[in-house]
Length: 198
Image (cartoon, rainbow, N blue to C red; front, top):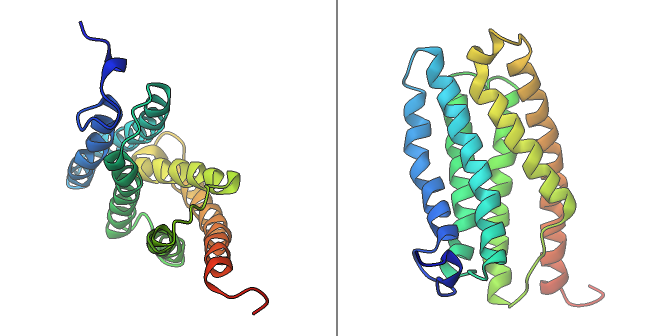
């Protein structure tokens, strides 16, 4: 059997890239779970999302460990993350798990993701790389945990009555961290586009 580590660097079919493709393909399955009226639909949605989060960690770790970083992987990895988060938030808003004032938290998170994607693309044209800060990584962790609890939602409330409330609380924390880390990206952008001392 061929050693996976022998896969050429940047290979389209490398395991890290396959994991990224899998996250994108998981989105229709996640959305479909919301059309299931039984509780198992919510539990399945939660586990699909958890699996996507684990694959996000694994593809980056394996790409570095096996020296399989690729242009397509660097492009698709953040896109896959944003797509599945956006799909989950939209479906949670559609079924009123996220409702009222909590919709603002979801809007803040989605707007930040679009803003950062645009800024990264712009900075890329200037050959400027903005490293991910530790706080941004914590924001992502809080955001993913919040969405996981919210996906369990009403089904989770039957086991622990505060499941949805806990998820909404974490979502607001993620939104606050989102505002701060988004400001960091804006500040980094202005440093590179504004003349010194202006």
